[in-house]
Image (cartoon, rainbow, N blue to C red):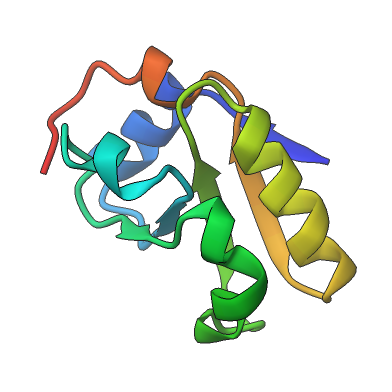
Length: 98
């Protein structure tokens, strides 16, 4: 299982890397802010919406503390996707919010 921290994600963003970020928190949670550039697919909708993602891309998955994004990661990897779990979630994020 591939993992990274919020600080590592922020480093990649500051370096200008092209990243594909999926926030799996629910709508009421993302209303308080998301990592810039992230899209929201709530975990409760994931089984119905994961095909919106492209198998050729690698996705960084985010939730509040890393648990739900780990579940999304296991699900996506079983479908043949490549992804990384941000293990400390938004609790570890100190960067800008959108």
